[in-house]
Length: 475
Image 1 (tube, rainbow, N blue to C red):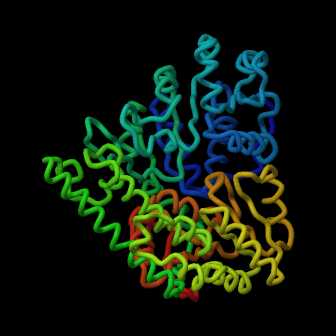
Image 2: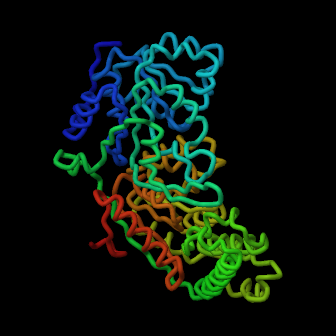
Image 3: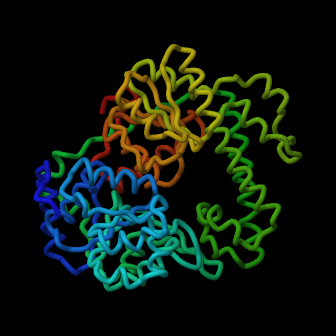
């Protein structure tokens, strides 16, 4: 290792974390540190300043995260030089044993790491510390046989005698576990503690009393209601069909003596649907209706109408009439344009490619410069760089890699449609590192209370850097 020291001075809360972790050497740690507070810097300080002689493996959850981590550790912070190596698909198999023998600090993806563990376990004996980035991603959001995703059951067993340090932006979600047709909602933090024995937790609350609040970038949430009478009429019918179908499911469960499986909770009906002992046609109808309502909220009108051609739906909707009266351009897209014209840099998140294309088309025709990122974008990093460093007006994204992206240059984020997973939405909101986030919702539809429930959960779980404002940005 070189004599180079960090170009950065730890903030007060970072020094507190480093002191606590150092004092707990040998005791497994789960660290919750919100987006933008420096998990990579903490990692650098641990491997360069606090434990400069220890051999360490840093496990990241994806190839893109590995590339960013390697870049940060090499160029942003420094002090590693020839100490740093990687285990990933980018490294040829014959070179991997050499990396493990010669490098003090290894950044690895779980899959490649497990293959090396199985192939040459003795190479890992000298390593003392395993740093797990985004440790919450180990938890399976729903599943039965195991609560931890592959290959972590094997890795955690193999590394049980090492010092494990897990880091995450948040450790406050829950997940579903299925056993013998039953479902339990479990706390992800408790699940992690079950699989990482003896782990001590350092949470955001533990940082109160330090200077952490000075460095929190406040995120302002605003609900922007979009009025569309035609969409409201469609969703009112869909809501009633969903309630009616759910009642049929509950009745069938009751008749079979299985009502206790869902405990009267509609969320459990949805999550356990495939496992419920009810008619398959009923299951298919229920899941289809839920998906159709999601399409109506999140797609351009002419696109979601293609899903209305079924004998069942023809009893309730005149598709030919709807095709005539529904506009080509979604009213949500029109609202996105209004917002983009009022701000210098706009980040737009939407779930479907059809909306990405329509938003790009409408904004471009209005004279705005627009970039897009979807699953098929091969040069994502270059697109992001252009948006950040040039005068591009808007960036429109489908749900791809949002957890890995930091875009503080965006003046406003517009979320065209929401999902019910609190943590996922919170992580989306934090991509801009503060500022204004506008959630679009069709007024007078079930989407409106859904968005309000989401905001309430976020305020309850992540109160330190979220505030709700009116549509004009006032508190």
